[in-house]
Amino acid sequence: MRKASAALVIGTALMLLSTAASARVPAPVLDKVRARATQAKFDGTILIGERDGTSEASSLGPKAPPPDAVWRWASITKQLTAVIAMQEVASGKLDLDAPVVRYWTDWKAPFGKWLRIRDLLLHNSGLPQPDASPEDKDGIPAFYRSAAKSPKVSASGFCAGLARGSPPQKFEYNNCDSIVLAEVLARVTGKSFEQLLHERLAKPLGMTSFGMFEVNLPPAKHVQPTGEFSDKDRLLNLGVYGASGGAYGTIGDLWKFDHALMGKQLLTADLKEKMWASSRDNGYYGFFQWIYPAALKGCSKPVRIVERQGLVGGIELRNFIMPESGRALIMFSRHRPTNLGDPWEGKGFAYDLLSAVVCR
Image (tube, rainbow, N blue to C red; front, side, top):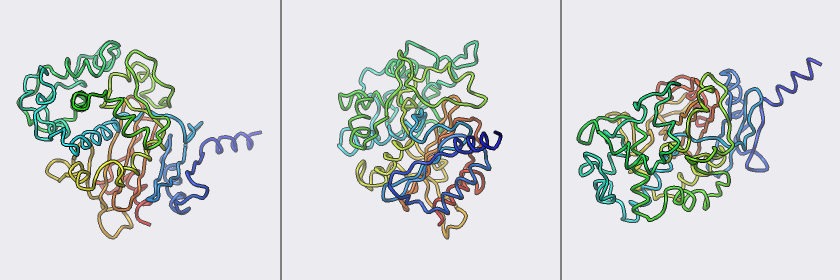
């Protein structure tokens, strides 16, 4: 009886999904990734994407969610926002160095005449900080609990409030930056941000489970956290995040976005390089994503990594794109804190997995 139960646990702890009849990811790579993830007691889903568009997803942990489960994408949403913005740059409708008020003439922010689109994308805006809004009795910042304030209302209300000073300000990660940018994009295109995401990304790329949480509706069914943040997680209003963290979909949907981004379907090479421009001086931060060289174990030279992190409530995510190899490593964890680590430090969980995926 005990042996049967153990077998059942092992069976549910590791479920695999391949996008092709035969896996293109080499077996030794998969074995390394799964073994390291098991060692780290990883609880969630990991996907390895290949240059040809195939992928392999592994779900690990007790009662692991299936590889095709829907997850919140948290701040990975910002990566999608940056791509839509660069598409408008390509069309000539958006100037990175133009002030927000060129496109949103009645925006009431104190420094709207000087705040550039570029400042939003680089988190140099100095806009009010949602994380610093007064906490309620449960310890949740008020910005993330409001049942009445849609992202559109927040863009013209809270995010247009008292700023830190005239832009550009020193880098400070801020959800208002992407929320305001989404409203600019809506005014430039005449379409809602949600409509832009569906027309330009979800529909053409076949992201069949993709969507955006809405303020006044129950959240779409998605993976729930299991870690120490799970109790407060249910108190968050996922609809208020909008372009800063309101997207959801499967891990396979995100891979479709990554693969298209590394190709030519979404942006030209020169526009991607503008979006990914970074240096040590600015903390290797590009437009809503980090781009840095990492000395991975087993590679002969540093590897350029495009990273987008996501963290909302008890769900933590990483999206690693390696443009030169055409590969990606995506990690969706439902147990926070996860201790994924930072690859540029040359150690840790994510570093080990990236080394296995890239340095073959």
